[in-house]
Length: 378
Image (cartoon, rainbow, N blue to C red; front, side, top):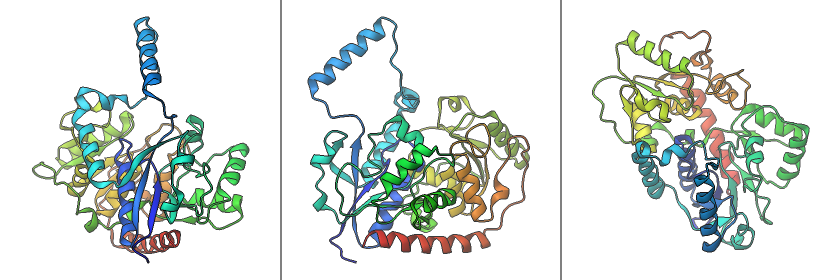
């Protein structure tokens, strides 16, 4: 494969989420291993504005707040508060040193004119929940259908739809948006099957990018934790008490301390809270844990890659099919690990898992996924 090929990647590469940033890192590394240069396109869904308009908006917002009218904030604005300042800086540092990005920032009202299509040999929409109807409802200006320009080649790697329920209207939108893609793949089997039927062409099921890299390759960036002795790691993105209660119970049974990564303000007051954790430190914490309790899809994936004993929960309340709940169980099932998934109403401590068979299945899926990725680069 020619060294001169340059690949443009589209995904949520700078979100303050361990899974999002690490899947971006992994896809870039996997493509570079196949002999290509990579560049994530830095994109903002809001229109580009001049300084005068920005200043006027700031004045209006300030005046409204002085009169008691509050502007709706992002639910993750807490990352910009003092208790999370060290975490924010750790994410920024990792992104700066490990995620190759475009030198220019593109906006929804400028990208079609300013992105030079001739600069790249292939365009790939990366993993994460980029084709979710919830994402599209929040802002249809996102670039993840690559419909803002006449691309010479459009591909997707492991793109998720974030749910198993779709309206007829959204299915029609998917049909219209994805028909022009050269190669399409999803990381969830159910999504691959649905799109195969909808589009009338094969949509491959591939691994999440984080599993394209072996544990030894992740060791290249993993930061060793400063924790003495065995420990249980609680990596919880939601706020369900069921999960924290189980983590503490497991700690009592195993006579090990439970360390909580500070993912939300709720966990700041917990004993052994871990603050200032960047993506590289996150990997090191999982790598060295004796057990992991998590409601995170990527938390499970890193445990599997490192052969760590783990317990998986739904992040959201409701049935297993609620929004993106299904993705964890579905993947665990594909590796014969569904017993690691816990029902909120009936949690149990399990015997440790032997990863021999799991590693064989994972190796087969990794080879097939890399073969698919190679096709996207041709």
